[in-house]
Length: 106
Ligand SMILES: [Zn+2]
Image (cartoon, rainbow, N blue to C red; front, top):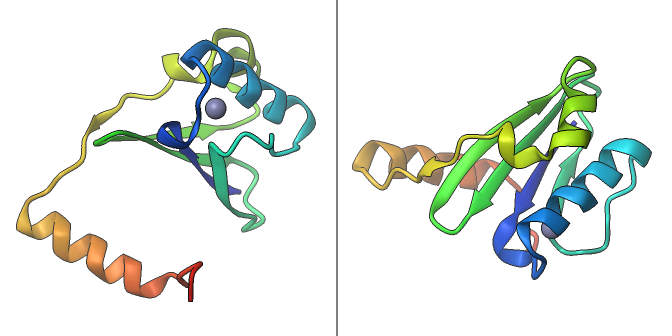
């Protein structure tokens, strides 16, 4: 399963955001807090979470092995946020991937 965590859409403190994400890992229900969306169930056993925070981006891969630790220690310890690339190569890449995805407003 893939999903995106938008820190910018979440009005909670980071610690509260870690907790609602832990709740999601426990019961599988997307919390109605606006920060988790773009859920795509591709049938894969692992959960791939793209984290967007301001102009930083990171990826968190959750498997049965690290799931409990993420629930107890919080997702922020397991994802390394790096500045989003704005070079010409990165832009061409993101443009092509945007075209591949259905646009929610369309
Ligand atoms: Zn949140």
